[in-house]
Image (cartoon, rainbow over all chains, first blue to last red; front, side, top):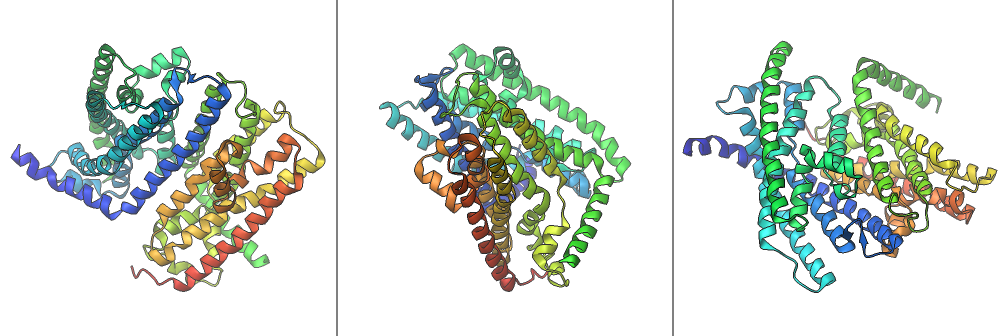
Length: 272
Length: 263
């Protein structure tokens, strides 16, 4: 255990340092997310005004605001840049430097990201949660915060992150075939945003589509934790959804390993 | 002027050659932006399965505004994408010296250098949505309304360009301004929906401060409602000219403040 720590802690430190060095970029993305939430807030407000009733497809306006901000935050928390990182390293060949080190490839990426993830929890998740709880208190006149839900949410976010990391690892290997990583990244993000319910709650989608999407890995990457936080799931359903997350984490782990084995062969063809 | 056009053609030809080399690249880029837009429309569609009207606008009218807003965005994306690179890394890595040492206007050179075909995705979606919704959106089609709307398009695109010029120029002082471009450019989200859904302070902000409302909603108000023809297009034209002049001033001050990164 100690040896593992010694090996991977430097990667984690590097992750924190990178985030601090590029803090303005990080800040820019946070503000970008905030602007997006503001636009969507007004759009939803117009929707609720036009719809007339208190509730729209089972969500009150207050719930919708919580969903909007928390889904966005969760997406940021579980967002993994590993697909871009690995793509760049494959392109410029520096991945060979990573491969000759006595560390496991994916673990070194993972620890680099964990450093950044820790920072995100501090500067993003905590302020957003506090803000939302104050908002809910003002709107509803009672404290809605449930510590148990928050803990389960956090557990679910960790699982979501593991799935997201593995999915992005798989996408990263596409760099072998695609040169336009920038365009590809936009494609990937918009697909994930839609399928994971961070754009629009899956509960709003037609029944067949919703059922399918709820079982796909994308819902596990954003929708599940938010619904748990909001207390939309019963105890049984919460356990069931967490189970699905664990299954997907295991499956994506296997798939990314398999692709990597195949990709290494391709890499030697390129000559590194 | 003729010399500039000749240079532009030469640089664009280089770009097209690169494009032929990487056809898959072009497809990835265009398809990405296409899917990105399709997802946005799916979102609007799902909302409208539950409500007949949104703040007095029908589904077709919202789609029309959304589609229209993508066209100025796409035009700017097609022509001036290199400004992103100036902000993100060209200045920081010292690459801007290249533009300073050549006998061409640096801004013109930066812009002429890239022809970003990814933007085709946005343009195709925009035009398709307009064609789809125009018939049933209940538009006030007169020669004047059509002409005024078309006139507004290049000026709306110029608003995008001006904002990118001004924000990328900040890199001349602080070396890297990518995040500022990202932040300000991201506000174009506001352009996709009718400006009337926002509260008054937000409306003022997106009309006069970071005027993205002028790239989507205002140019089509006349087509949609038949009201205030000259006022709406007039605001778009005059604000975009003011912003363009301001952005050139910022750019030129930045150029004189530029000192090479000494890479």
